[in-house]
Length: 409
Ligand SMILES: Cc1cc2nc3c(=O)[nH]c(=O)nc-3n(C[C@H](O)[C@H](O)[C@H](O)COP(=O)(O)O)c2cc1C
Image 1 (cartoon, rainbow, N blue to C red):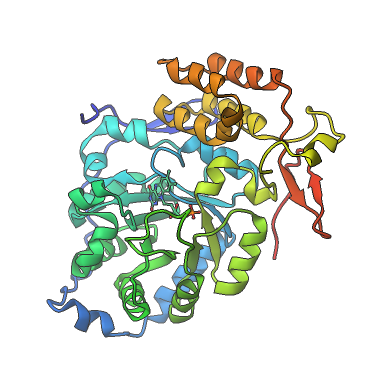
Image 2 (cartoon, protein in one colour):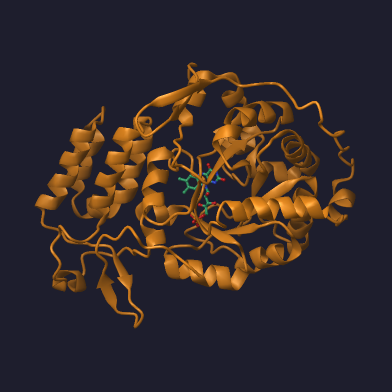
């Protein structure tokens, strides 16, 4: 069922401040749209030199944003405003919105207001769209351009729904269309366009693809180092060598995605790929404090039993979840998003206390009070599973809540 329409809401810390509709106005100065070559291969293999001013502009923009390295990946229903704000509090230096459907976004105010909210502190921000129609994509992008730092095109979604809708990774079969999407935005928006891709099985195809995107006007490329068929990230490791090759081949900033489960992985990935930053998805859902150096312990181990800090002093998943609820109160989102977060953030705890999960599943209508009571029930079971970090000698340590942690390399 399609949502009904009301308008795009942009929240300040206290209130909604703007209600907007899409604009269809295209800039009069738009350069002539370049023709898509009927032979994609021929076009793709052309490694045309990038005009220097475009490259410089791409880098100037990236530098103005502070060259963010620790980035919340786009996640449908999961990288929404309160979750982004929680991750930012714990070290994330930029974030993507969930993928938004460009046609619905352009045509339907209710979809806009329920699926996209932001606030002044929610920057740098990538707003991601799926699309297969350049005009609709532009109409959607023009609504969000005042509120973001990049408009991103999803070229990586491998799900069946993307196949049916002909978007995401299925556009890898129609590269002239991809080119026209990128060109449309690059020529008409005041913010840069970025793309998030998956790799092809053959490196040469990935490189030709990346070159084409850069040439079409993409100012930043995020590379998920898995193919369209490698759907389960927990089973197949992302190919960092392919990401490294893309980084070496392109002149615009390149971000690496895949295999980031803790801060040590970030260091390793940046060293191995030379990428300008990393995206993390699955691991952040369980541990939104990952970028601040916190790690999950597998379970309530003996080591945890020996920890001397009181539960009040250290950070654990229930505490993070309570902090999420605070952000939620300030920045409300649909409850289906919240429900998914409870299961991700408290899933390890529910494995040990399935009765509490059952109570949660039975509750049709969630509320902050109900969810706080869920956390209290877990606390009452006297479980202690703090988030930890490994100190320089590799020893397990418990990090006290520390908000000033910043990553530097
Ligand atoms: C719940 C969930 C939702 C996702 N939604 C999107 C999305 O909207 N757009 C997108 O480009 N990728 C999406 N992804 C893929 C991630 O952005 C990321 O590319 C992928 O999970 C690999 O990163 P990871 O190994 O850190 O999980 C999603 C992943 C998850 C787990």
